[in-house]
Length: 191
Image (tube, rainbow, N blue to C red; front, side, top):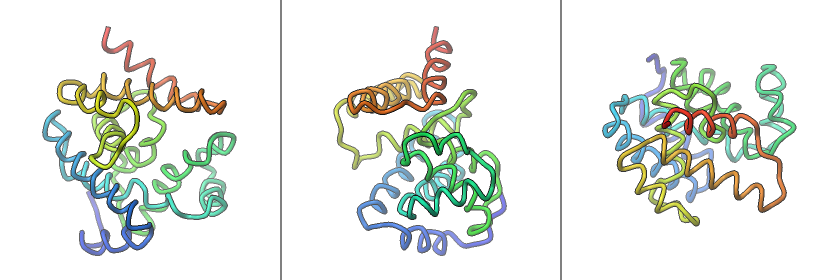
């Protein structure tokens, strides 16, 4: 795992790219990702790194996020969906340039932390779930997700995806197909 900055330098850059409240969220995701990695046999260092960088582009102007995706010719289908999905893929494209992080597993965990994907890796699941359930999160069903995460990444993630899908349906918004596919695959794996 090649990284060109020190941990403190990365933290400083990430922290300066977001409001204090979002930094608290990021710190919570880092802590939770390490706990989940230790619980489920993941790599705590990779979980911590992916969690640190997962929201790096979250507060960039949406046009800047769009530009990153278009310039890289990447994840263009996302442009037809909810803008909050854009920051993960944008960060996965920017992180190698800005931070020197090139580990494909870490970059994929950053890329798919909001949408999930088919064939989610252990690290994908850990970062996605940590984002749902970090200690600062407070939404209907989050405690159930936390309880499920005591024993099963997959059941907890299904509950998380269900919560997201329900929220989008209630708001009359489109659901990104990859999220539905990830949810369905996780359910199939449990049967």
